[in-house]
Length: 114
Length: 111
Image 1 (cartoon, one colour):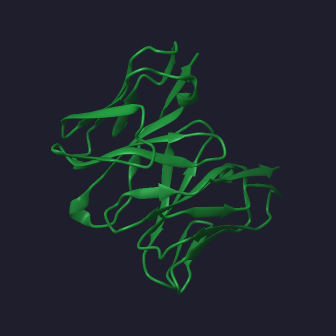
Image 2 (tube, each protein chain N blue to C red; image 1 turned 90 degrees about the vertical axis):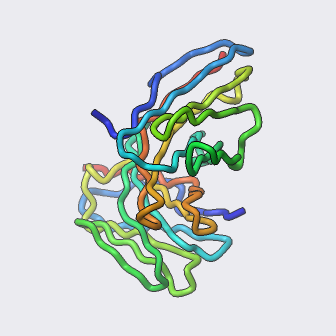
């Protein structure tokens, strides 16, 4: 099983619908992140959480919300989806106890808003 | 906010050729990460650089962080089709692992 699991892997939704993307990890890491990837724009940080009670906005948080239900779970919600939120979304985790180390990424969720 | 610019944006090379990808930051880099992404998939960690002048290698991939810690280069020796993908540099802007990413370099290796 993957260390960082994102569900669903693919989703098509209509404009105005509420949608939730879920992320769970088995690595025991305290830090979790949500990024979106658009062609030509690399990855942009949406929200990040350093522990269950610490949630912070990233570069592009407008139109998104998150919930850290447990150390292992971090979900991303689009309250009212719009077409320009069509993108590839990645969840990532890292461990603060080891200083600056790598982030582990999920396989991504491809979201299409029509 | 920290901005990372990668060059080139895309690269097509013949198998066996060497290549270099650059990542330039608008600010001092506290931690510089290189990742590889296969098209439409997750990111695979390659290496992390922290100290000015630091150089690391993994198989045929070498990355270096310059002395001023504002630019990093990734060099692939004797490229193979398995090296194809998107290479992304990421930087830890303030030492808190809030990593921002460059725009990526798309590499194609022609057999």
